[in-house]
Image (cartoon, rainbow, N blue to C red; front, side, top):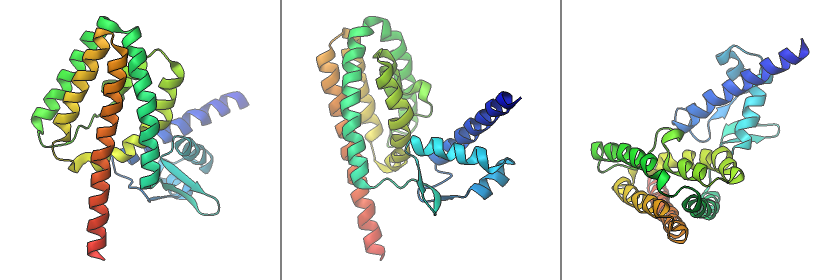
Length: 231
């Protein structure tokens, strides 16, 4: 009986973590928002135990911050942390692209084509917007991580790094034209992987991540200037 109860509690906490993750990454819960255990327990009609466990899961993924004697809040990712995040991302994703080129080859062509055609449709509908992907199964970067064949790279990227990147991605919405540029970069990376050229694939991926960071950093600077001008 206790085993069933333990399993049930684990499932409840996973469900709560998934719901809160969606709320955070879609912007419904903004960075800095307080995540009170009592309020969340009332919202989801559960005890505080599963809520506490769910918040712990989100803290492990880097999108929630738990401060002793203060409680949990949606993480505010500072510029220095964002820069470090993108540095790690560039290294891991470049390696993933190199491995994907060795493992996938031309067998990956149909998968990339379907994915990029879908993204092209999104860009055509919003040509001045950012390159925002709405689900992980269609995310170009997740596909490459899967094709790398390295379970550690895949786990670290999908469970720890990408949730934090998604929290930052909201800031890309005002990067005019970045969507079309990113799509073109993705096309070149996919072509290198399909051709089996790992060296070029890794180089192009690293450059792509660097361009993404440059666009984000420019916007962060502009946001800080706007805040200063209003104070």
